[in-house]
Length: 91
Image (cartoon, rainbow, N blue to C red; front, side):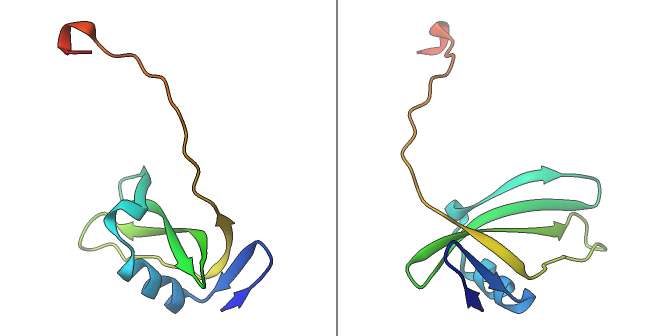
């Protein structure tokens, strides 16, 4: 592991360990195709947070591809959103 000013460089084994302990709320599916499901998730390392990306096989035959690399630091921000709500369904 190499921690830079605004990123971290991790081996594939380090990424696997971080994904394993990551909470369900800290990761999300960003894309799916026939063979793979692509995820991104936030991992905390030494008090800083980094966005990790990886893919997992969508079938029992497909391999999970978890690669090491450089991952950017992220911060959590509160965001106000507007959305359309059907007034006939309690909106």
